[in-house]
Amino acid sequence: MILLSTASTRRDMMTATLGLATATAAVSTVSAKTRNVAAATDDQHAGSYITSKDGTEIFYKDWGSKSAQPIVFHHGWPLSGDDWDAQMLFFLGKGFRVIAHDRRGHGRSAQVSDGHDMDHYAADVAAVVEHLGLVNAVHIGHSTGGGEAARYVARHGKERVSKLVLIGAVPPVMVKSEANPGGLPIEVFDGFRSALAANRSQFYLDVAGGPFFGFNRDGAKRSEAMIQNWWRQGMTGAANAHYLGIKAFSETDFTEDLKLIDAPTLVLHGDDDQVVPVADSAPLSAKLLKNATLKIYKGFPHGMATTHADIINDDLLQFITG
Image 1 (tube, rainbow, N blue to C red):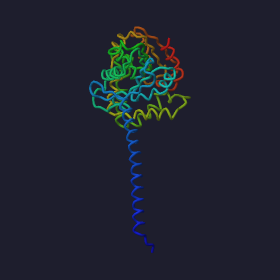
Image 2: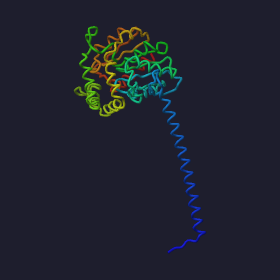
Image 3: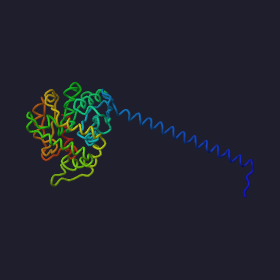
Image 4: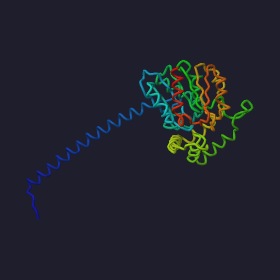
């Protein structure tokens, strides 16, 4: 048996106590630093949101010098601002300020019950633009985002916009009617709704793996990375917003919006677009716009800004700087 003296025991206890106090202080210091870093991160994260007029939180990305000319990107359904990565990095490298938001109910924006229509979409964009104080901006919209951009420019942004680009965009109107006999039957969009409600995850894999990027065409070089990234963006958003968004992108008539736009507008479309057929979209929009340039790409799919980013980016740059 080993016996410790009282003095030795006291010394050991004091040493242990001092050691514990030192360790506690160190942990407290690390915790404080961690809290400070977390607070700074939270502040930075909070700075990437604005609240629209109806109280909806809208997420946005804003990269580049605040003194540079801004380019605002409007994403397609059911995606997010991440769908513009190839364009945002390209134009950031060219010295532009690049901004992309997530539409309400999409991506990181609030998953609200109401406002899933083009009027609210455009008003949300206006809130982002006003918050950032953007002027002389170029707005680029793809698919549903093309409709959103057109409505924004026509009804909110005339004094703040320098140019507009519509890529594979839904205007003038997609659904077939007596006034639009070349449109797609309503049953097509009913099928979208049914597939989304039945199995949204599988539906998004099918869209990305097939018509969106043209991977269902003979000889197409399939990219699993593109498919998974598309699926990721879609599944981040809200099912209700995507379901209601189908009506917004398919049934909204942008005819009067296009007539009001006088900013120089570049209309780009692939002639193998299986999502927004070219014959009932780009040429008709170009005729309605006051100052339009139309370019049709042979064999390009709906998602050509991703599959053919190098070509699209160069054409965008030429238009913006020309």
